[in-house]
Length: 178
Image (cartoon, rainbow, N blue to C red):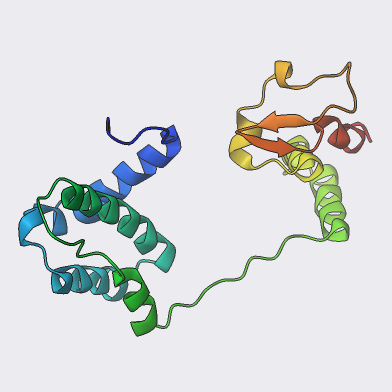
């Protein structure tokens, strides 16, 4: 972990989770110098066929393994990275169904917010979704939001969050106040 600088905390946690849950007790027991491309192919096929993991999960596992083997190449422990091109081969060999995501339209957002507002069982969720829809923030960003992040004096100032430029949080206030 000390060698990889600039890695966000959540990314590191996700990498460790993937390694501990999918690699450590099986493929992770192999010595780096003994791993062949066929071992990687077999491991990826097992993840896809037997463990029924999605391609995005296998892609994350591949990112972790690829970096480890790249470092081993750089340190002259092995000559080549056995994970090279293995994810591409896996994608070609398997017919992974890629789910297309579709954003809600403005009308669908209004309909959803109206449902939340008038349904006693769910109306406590209204402010959260109103802020998300009005600002474009993701759930992790909204859950970390603090009052000091909102500048009521400068109504036109954009809000920077997690390194990204976000629309002004005040854009969603009219929705909340209705």
